[in-house]
Amino acid sequence: QKDVDAAPTIDVAVRNYMRWLESLDLVDSNGIRKGNWCFATWGDVDIMSTLRQEIAFKSLNLPSCFDRWINLKNESIFKKHYGREPRGGLRFCVESIGATWDGRAHNGLIDSFNTAKIVRDMVQTGFR
Image (cartoon, rainbow, N blue to C red):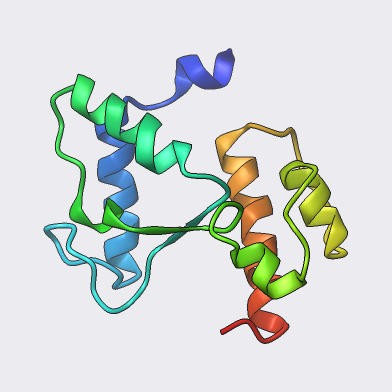
């Protein structure tokens, strides 16, 4: 609960995130995507539902770079690369590729790090 209480509000968090993306030259100062990239997620709910609902509830604008993402779990991306369904949850899938699971499941930051392990492994093992 301490983390939640100390966390920035959604408007501040999105603004900081967009600044970070801009510092990496992934978006311009208006939040418009530069180049051909998108987010990688483990499920649709975070970007498609939760973030959009919270932004709408607070009457904020969602930056346009959130218009597309790759759902590793539900779009057969994982299956296409590894030849098996992504069953058993994120932790099982991370460990099944030989990576070490870090942290507590369903913590957004930790889940992001663990999802990135799958993306990194896919890139390193020839996913195209």
